[in-house]
Structure formats: C-alpha cells, structure tokens
Length: 463
Length: 99
Image (cartoon, rainbow over all chains, first blue to last red; front, side, top):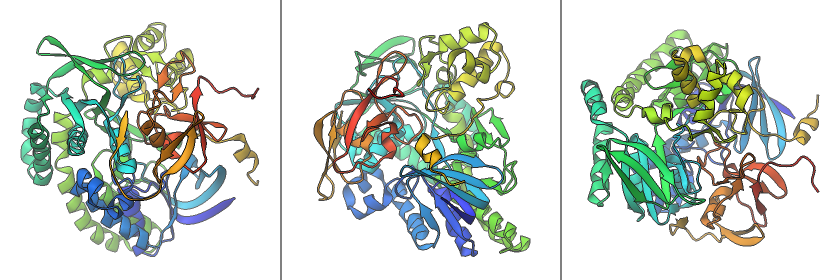
C-alpha cells in the first residue's frame, strides 16, 4: 500500500498542525501523520474531548491549555489530510516515509517533509526511578488530560522546570495530596539567571504565569523546597519514600507516587535515523538537528519545526511550523521569495517574543548535574537493559570510547526504546569519564525500524 | 494508584486484564485503563524480572509494553482500550515460539 503527497508533516502538535494550516492557505496538498488518536500533540493532548466535556478537567488544566483548541479547530477546517494512530518506523531521505497503522504498513512518498515530532521529558535517572509508582510529571499530566486520572495517596514531585510546577498546581487543583515539590534548583542558579531577567521582561506573561503557579501551590499548603540534592526513591516493589539532602541534612518523605521532571529535550529519533546533521547544545545539554531560519535540515526537502528542533514551547512551535510551511510553499512555487519573506517578517517578531523567556528558563532550570551524570553507580541508566551508571563507567575504563562501542559491550541502547531514554545520559557519562566534551563522544547510531512492526506487515508489502 | 475525576456520561468500556474484567472510559489508552485498576505492575523486565509500570505515557520509554489480544510488545499507552480486549502483563522477554 502506498500513497504520495506534496507535503508530509509528521506530528500533530502545535508545530505540525500550524504548518499544515499555513501550507493549506497557500494551496499545498498536505498529509499530517501522527501517532496519537487526536490532534494536539502532548501539550494540547485530548483537547477536543476536554473542551467538549465541560469545565471540570479543562478548568484544572488551565486557560493556556484550552487556548490550543483554536489551532486544532483551524487544523480540522484546513482541508489537510490526516492519518492518526500512525507510527513512522522508517524515513528515507529520497522521499519516503514508512508508517505502521492498525497492524499494516504503508509507504508514503513525499516531495517535502516537515518533521514536527516535538519534545520528550529528559530522563531523570536516580536510584529507584524504575520502581512502579514513579513516572514523569508530564506522564502524569497525560493521564489527567486523556483519562481524567490523578494519583491517589501522597504525591511528591521532584526536579526542576516549569512543567514540574504546572503539574503540581494542576494536581493540587484536582484535589490530590501533594506532600511537597522538591526542586533541585539552587541559589547559584537564581544568581546565574539574574542577568537574563531584562530580556525575559519582553515576555512578561511567562514570568507572571511562573510566579502565579508558585503562589497557588504555596497557598494550598504544599512546601516547595529548593536546593535539593542526592534524590533517591526507595520501596519494596514500588515507590514508598523519597530520600534527599538539603542544606547538608538528610531528609525523607513518604510517597505513593513520585513524579520526576528535569525539563524537556527534542525528540530526534527520526532526524537521527535519517542521518541529519545534529549539533550539541552545550547550555541546554541536548542534541538538536542543524537547521536554517526556515527549519531546513542538512537534507534537502526535509525540515524540522517546533520543539523537535530545539525547545521553545508551544507558541514558538506554532510559529516555527508556519515558517517551515512558508518555505515549503515557496519551494513548491506557490509563493515568491518576497511574498514568503513578507509573511514571515511578522511571524518572526512573534517568535522572538516567545523565545525571550528561554535564556531565563534555560539558565534557572538547567538540568541538575546528578541527572546528567548520576553519581551513584547503582543508578539504572538504560532502563530497558538495566545498565547502571557504574557499568557504563567500567565499560569506558575497559576501553569503550563512545556510545556505539559501549552498546556492543553492555547492550545499553539496544532495548525497545532504542536509546530514547538513555542516550543523553550515556553520552554525558562517557564524556565525563573520559574528560572530553560531549560533541566528541557523539550519540547512538539509530537504525530503522524505529517503532515496532511485525514480520507480517513486511511480508504483506507489495513490491 | 490512580483515581478518576468525574467527567461526562459516556458508558464505560469493559475489557479483561489478567483475566479480570475492568472498566475503562472511552478514549483511555490501555495503559491508562490498566493503571486505573491498580495493577501493582504491568510488566517485568527481561534482564532481572524487575516490576515496572508505564513511565512516560507518550510512546517514548517502552515501559508500558503489554500483551494485547495475544500480541506482545505493544505500547499500551498508544493503543486505545476497546470493548472485549484481552490484556496481560508482559513477563520478561517475549519468546519467539508459543508453547
């Protein structure tokens, strides 16, 4: 089975659907492919359902979430073709996507591709993080958005970043017992972030929102404890308590659910599989595809829009999607260079405003060094194959110079997640152990299939 | 351990987890519906047999692998719960040949 399109978009989050809307305005035939069953990505997940069903869950999630409904409605009206529930398991630079949908594989030929795969939560390795009862704060938010589920019992949130506070606020609003928010952010991080404040004032709505979240959490009687380190989770077969150090003193909290978060990072699995050029962002500690100002990657006719190219948030992602679509329209001959640039000018001004908050967020909420290079050797780094930080360090001592070699020694990165969760940490640990910068170490080589498929799907393919 | 916020009036979906009937809300992923039923764990790891539950809920971590309608290695967080589904925990590694 195969079909073709002028413009394929992978991802139905804000970047992908904004790209589709913009491309449709300029007359392109667009096909949007997404793994989830409804548009919105993660940030606006299940928004159509939550807007329909009345106030309760929407009210808990808040107005920024609900505002995403406008963009989703625009997408539904746009006339773009849409394939939900479709996982891309292979992408070819010469113009093909291979998708798996309802147990069948299909090939999609494209003239141009916009990848809008968004972000994922940075892995937060610590002793005990693989226990049942521990999940990403974003994961808990998905359960709230998609299923109206909230954790029962005592909840502890730990880590850093705006999403940590947002989820804490939402759970408090949903009536959960939030025992504490443990922030790894230190005084030194506030001091380092102070010079970024003037620029951040260009986007005051983000600052106001951050302060309001803290106020609401504190008003509910939930302690927000900063400068937390030495986090670890303990329990018999499931999470039962969180231990940590603060101001030189050991402490622990009973917990039934522990939600971890240390920011989000670009989901680069498809760009890696395509062998796009990537660059290491040393400040934000992640890899991102090399792009120009239109999102073009190092591969002709393939662009990246949104958080998949570097974290900027939902509003910036939508603008980024539109810019990539303008470029697509120009390349397809629907827009002259001048028309493209004129339309882009006002979009870029909006983008600059939304990105003004990033230096402050990136400096204040820089990932704690303990989650980049876990100090405790017993910490599982590769969750799939249960490879610990100590095993990684031993492998480097035995002569492994990079992640692909270490993979051959230890199987880290060989499990089903294909390095999505361990890749960043493995690169950092090797770099730190060898005393060289991360870019010299590199990353896993990613090969298709990047999502599970059955042999039956392959044998059913017509040649 | 999760509880449901009251919402909508849609009739629940019923499916089986480990042979027990459990209720799901329309639109639930299998992972969400199983978590709501307090399963303790949803898979054990191939290497050490350690208990796991879904972690990221968005298709990245693969800790939500379960056997759904006889097919193992399925990312339960990406599959919508359907009436009459039969879901089991994934215990250890999946064998190539069934008994």
